[in-house]
Image (cartoon, helix red, strand yellow):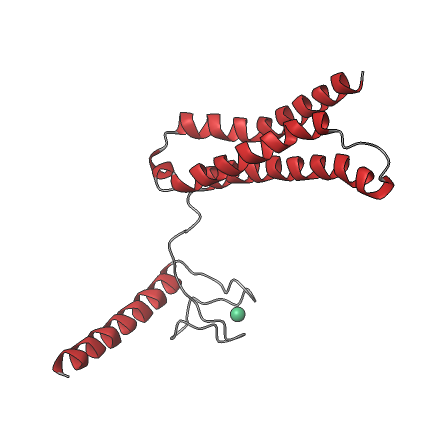
Length: 164
Ligand SMILES: [Zn+2]
C-alpha cells in the first residue's frame, strides 16, 4: 500500500516535471503549434491555447533524416517491385490465355525479397546511424537517390532482353 502511494507520488512529480520542461522548451525556442501555428512562447500549459492540441516533446523515433532517406529509397524499390509484378501479372489474370511470363516476374520477385530484407536490417541500424560521419551520410544520400533509378534500369534491361 505504502509502495503504491510512493509510486503514484513519483508519477505525479514526473508528470509535473515533464510539463514544466515542455513549457520551458516551448518558451525558450519560441515554438508555435504544429497544428494551427499559434505561438506557444507565452503558454502556461503544454497545450495550445488556440486549438487545444496537447504538446508533447519527443525524441525522433525515426532517427536522423539521412537514415530516413535511405528507408524511403528501399520503400521506393519495394514499390517498383510490386508495380512490376502487377504489370506482368494483371494482364495474364485479365486475359487468361497467355502463360504467366515467369521469366519476367522472377527478377522483381527477387528484388521484392531483397528489399524487404534490406528494410528489416535498415530498421535495425537506425540507432547506429547517429554515429555516421558526414562522408557516410553523403554516400548514403547519393546511393539512396541512385538505387531506385539503377534498380528500375536493371529491370527494364532484363525485360528488353527477355522480350527479344
Ligand atoms: Zn494549435
